[in-house]
Image (cartoon, rainbow, N blue to C red; front, side, top):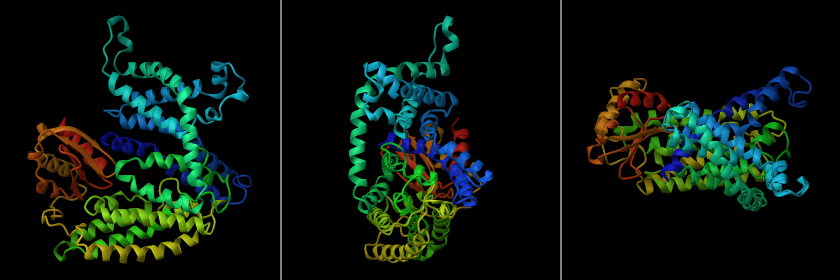
Length: 477
């Protein structure tokens, strides 16, 4: 589970590239919505620039995941991921498989025509990152010293990927067939399949496994490629985008309603600090579609609410798909992507998503408020621990001071076993859990603390976590 969470964090690096493609293609289609660049040179330039990113997502995944999984975030890890991807996609291309098996290209299993996909990109990144971590400190005899250390990682990766490719020669057709069957089963259910996808997408977020599910429907693993086809304008109007559209009402409106409900149900003496948290998290969800600050604020303290959230997300995708209203995103279903996709060729009645969203705002607001008060759920501002959201003298831009206080609350440098971070949280392992002072950490102007394991501590900082992490690493070193 811990490794899957780390993989989820690593995947966020390549996913973060998507907004660039979304902005470029969105503006291009906005300029030339009917010709798709054929009637305007500027539009063509922008659209093709964006497609350069979208069309090469598998390589971006291979490089980005390897980098994200490396212990020291070194470029040599990215090179290992790239080498892994190039070896496997070359050896398992249809023409190579035809030579290896002694059959004509036409007789090669169709799975190998799809070997250049996001799944293989992620797999290559994982293997490249693991090999880098294992071999980047390898010392060779003096005669081979040039190939020691970090240079050895891509070399070892190329050799190991030859073996992996041989395994995939037999395994990939089976895996591909299973993925096709799963995707076909769910996509064949039409609007209901879209709803199930939305439900499991949210439900799997705590584990990080939602990325695997997303790759089946959003990228070209089994041919659905909902994001790519929607932005490229290749698909069926009112259908392509059905695995994206339903997220807009949830992220732009529903979760904002949930934030308002949690603010209003907070204890009177904690409304100020809770309001600050909910305002910032709600704005991030609405404007950019970044929902982690909000979702993690109640995911573990009130899991029943999170289950309700997952169900409502599934219902939203089902309703949007039933009405054939579509919009798409390059990063997430926030206001920015909504505006950029509004005039895309395959956008269909996107204004209906605003109507659904307004309804969802009130559904989330009243349902969350009822459940919180009815069952006395310990959402932000309602905790029994008075220190949970204590006021802090540290400004949320004083990253060095925040890091220092967090480190002190964790028991000092000697008590830190490992450090990492994701989009909003510091992920830490401590030597002695009894030395952790929660109250002191909470005074560092953070969002909260989670302890998923005996020695695991997760400090929820928010979107500024990268800067706090950088300062924290300096102190630990």
